[in-house]
Image (cartoon, rainbow, N blue to C red):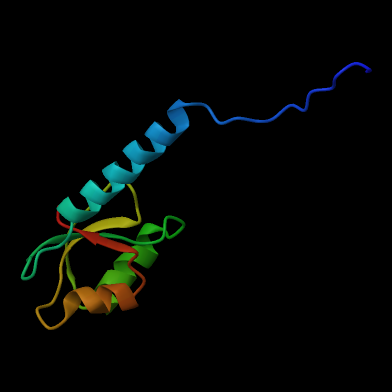
Length: 101
């Protein structure tokens, strides 16, 4: 018999599965706790990150939402949506995410 050759196999580190579960559980908890409640008067709105402040303000205004304040990130606004289906109009105007501030 000749010399034996071993085939190297790549193995994932043992901590990778635990880290994946930790990140997944954090995302689920954040999504559940930051949901906008029905009848919320003020919401934080995230528009696409490449939008500048003018685009975000125009999108919020086109959805008939009153701007409460701006943030350091131009694509994030705190607004008061209109009572008549305001969150749906914000999403149509380009909002990616609406959260309870």
